[in-house]
Image (cartoon, rainbow, N blue to C red; front, side):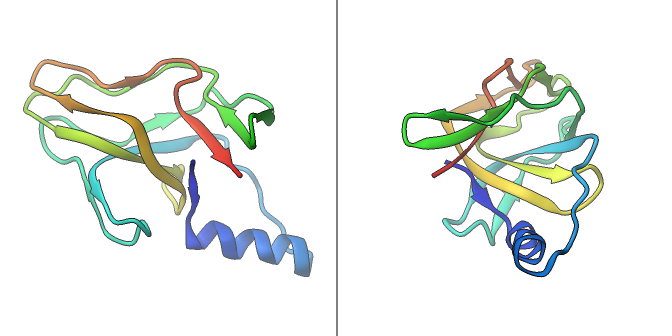
Length: 132
């Protein structure tokens, strides 16, 4: 399950109830975290070892109903550069507007330790934004 950021919640409420507007970004920045509080307010983003947020522009699937959720997933692989030092155990991710505000954040299905010389990636369809 993915969580809306406060920014996205406020933006959507303005669009739905006040006729506000929102332009979907053409690309997104994907961030990795080694810790995050249950409300997403406090987080430890991976740092060092050549880590940088990964810009992603391949797009997303059309929304689909999967079980009791509605979800989209990445249509292209999201491959981070190779780690030049340990990144620790990656447990969470977040999706940002390119160079802007956080939109979604969530717990990974499976935590993964990234050591020096390894890469972290989301294969096609692995990064799912699911809402219930």
